[in-house]
Length: 219
Image 1 (cartoon, helix red, strand yellow):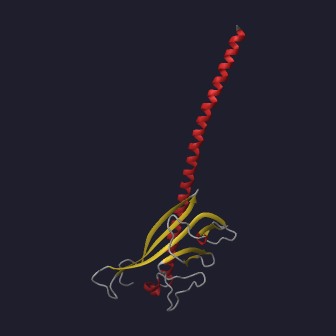
Image 2 (cartoon, helix red, strand yellow):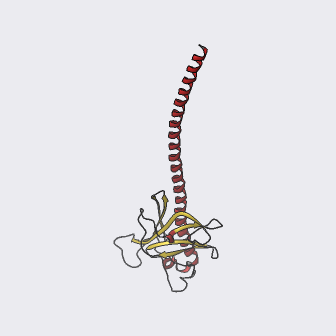
Image 3 (cartoon, rainbow, N blue to C red):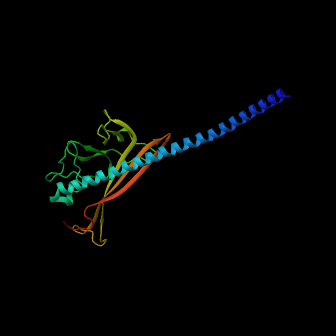
């Protein structure tokens, strides 16, 4: 009698273990699925934060160029606040020669030697959000933590950054459109940062307007 009860007890315990393992497997599968989704969401959230900071840096670097021009060419700010100095020619607007920012796509580099940002004009218009630009727009991190487009000996990042610049002029008084009439003179800055999220292309845009002393006829 004792042996029969013992055998039956063992059989019931084995069945319970099998059921418990099955339930546990189902629960763990669901939990792991949720964790994977949360991890992917967190990863994309982190990338969006990084992309936002890269876009902000793009805006601020163009602002830095404008401010540098205001100080450097203070004798002729009206004509030279959009001066396009380059790392090759850091004094491009000295004298009567004016090399200005025109509408188009650019990339940004920081010169350690000059201690300032420089724009580099690039061909074609800014790419669509669903299309990554060429590798010339890929970002890298230098040994000192700066962001650069220079690939050699730098750590490649999954981000691409384009800067679209559009100078704009609008007469403040529509009835006055001659030389000397006050104008709203500004620079539209659109920074687009893109990265790959699995097989999908993610994109973040940040836009700002930089002004040439808004509404001033003269300095």
